Figure 1 (cartoon, rainbow, N blue to C red):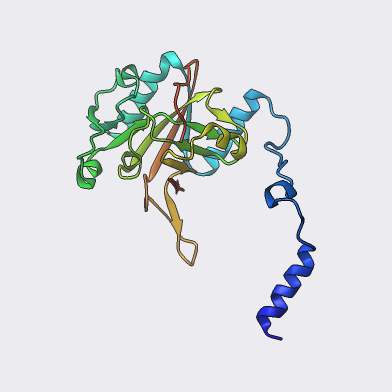
Figure 2: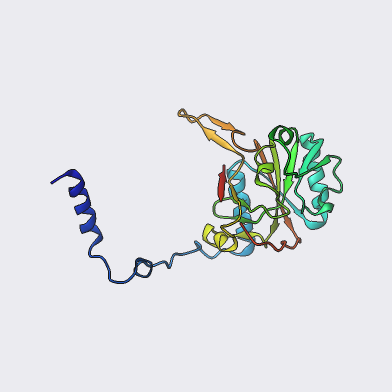
Length: 227
């Protein structure tokens, strides 16, 4: 008896007899989609904690102060130009002195790299994993505009865009859309665990949790993972 036959025999004995019903029906899919019973406020707090744990810079603001907060963050960065998705609410950057650069299909990577910052919305944010998901909706633009510039400010509308777990996020997203999953600034480590940031995305991620803003309608968001 060959090694292959021995291994397959062991697998067969472990799995047991093949059920007569289809595999999809035989396997229980009643997975838990959340851990614990968190309040809305605690879910948002958990998101903030896990974003910070991934070295994202987290800020909070109400809707009325959002333009002021964005202007302050861009000024602190020294940003003179900012990439702007086509559907970004115009009042968000009303107080900013940075020159808006529209998201154009013909822009080259070199042109995108010259932009100091990019400001976007998001599709959904996952509290348990500290993950922000973009799906290419008008307030987020093409995925490349959040991968080339070195500084990304992402606005999350709370609590409407915050969910507790990945399964709950997946129910909001359309898998046919270009999904970008972001867990902190872009980073990698070599074999000695020396961390290097900004390898395949922005070196700096700032997240603004804004209250009092309605979430835009979207046919939510294949898939790229950053962070």
